[in-house]
Image (cartoon, rainbow, N blue to C red; front, side):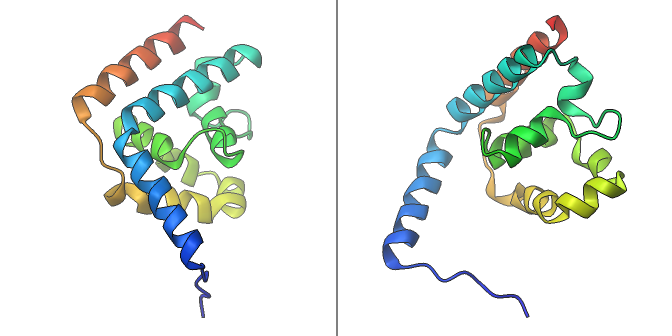
Length: 134
């Protein structure tokens, strides 16, 4: 039996307001999160492969940033929409063992994360260009 969280009226209202805010400013949030990913890569001297893919049995940068609440679920969902990465994460047994619920949550959010594809693709292309320059 799965226990559903019980929220007070104030918590529920706050969650709804936050969700609506993020939904309305998804392009800006995505752009800010892409900048955080680039800054993290520069700070930790990461190669582009280590940002999106699992390297040497370690976790990729975007997963670490997501799990650390430094980038949003929406950003990870959008990156996976444009450049599928989650299927490779799921092939790593230790990754699935530790983060199966989070990976499933990212996958299930697909129908709830909506965005202007043209705007997001421009931001994503800039992000990918910056990754290549690392």
